[in-house]
Image (cartoon, rainbow, N blue to C red):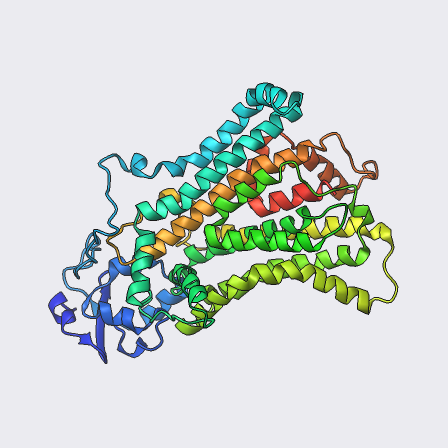
Length: 506
């Protein structure tokens, strides 16, 4: 049994004791192996690290490792003593967020309820806006007019809400300002030094600092909560990016302009956030969808290349997310995060490069009758990969006591304290929670719009009794059924909903 006074005496390199939840640990020998860097342990030396340990959300493996360093118990500890006795980071006037005296349910920023308003407006817009704006402004009639108008309204609202949910919230809760201070100090939240040079181009290196700080804060402790959201979100974003490739085709052709367009949206997404960019993309593509009549004329090499491209799109997030699963140095984490900024350019050229290789290797081209099935299969496969990423997050909720649906996906469960040492990691996590939520709210009406354009179309093989054909025809009938599509989106992910909606059109 040790007193707090005894613990405070062990506060220097080679002699580091901390207490967490009433247990005392000698972590002197763990200094160089700590995933967050030794500076974190040095900062906590001789103090109660309970609050900081809980803020980060350590994995089960990390907790097992901690147990091996236990040397005793803290005298007089009760379960209510969970605040660290060390001095909290002083709230800077530059970014201290002002807390309201409202109840906690209302104190959250207004953006937290906007996605739900967004979905409610779907039903209202279908019955009202469709009758007036759709008919008088767009010259459309009936059900289809309601879908088009509702989708237009949602796209504009989603664009505005997305920006506020991401950057407005980050400014209000102090996350953006804390990232700025980290650039100035040159010390990451993990305690490791911030690498200032990646390319040797000063302007580009400065641009890379923010994402490096952002993702390093989420990955250095390998928190299962943060990791679950990252996997689900990035699998959805890669599926959406693949759908953008398909969506840029004209008459079954993927031209150089298609490559440049998909590259533009990918870079735009990395710079401003998916919750801001995707609603804007949907708005600009409401009258542009994959030309399902043209896919039958697509060269089979191009169509076959889409299959392999969908696999590459699904796998490439491992480039960024590797450090959230396996231990690696701070230097490696930063290089991986910074280099991932090149992913949009690589993905944009993947399909034409693979198609060229297929033409060189395959002496006898496949029959043109394969074009449409290959394109459809690539979209179905993309949706499956997105669903698997989302299932990983849902599986973590079921199997891990540390992970719940709320703390993975709901901004309501993430409170960002600008005076906390975890302000960046918590703020960035809430940023990505908003990303996921707004993407889901934007995908539902857009998928409904796509499906409504062919709600009366049925598969040519509708009578053959195949399960896939039956499912395809059922999915085509979901145009305008926002509640059902929202349920599918929550269960399988927004990326899966979008990919399968496009697949049903091919």
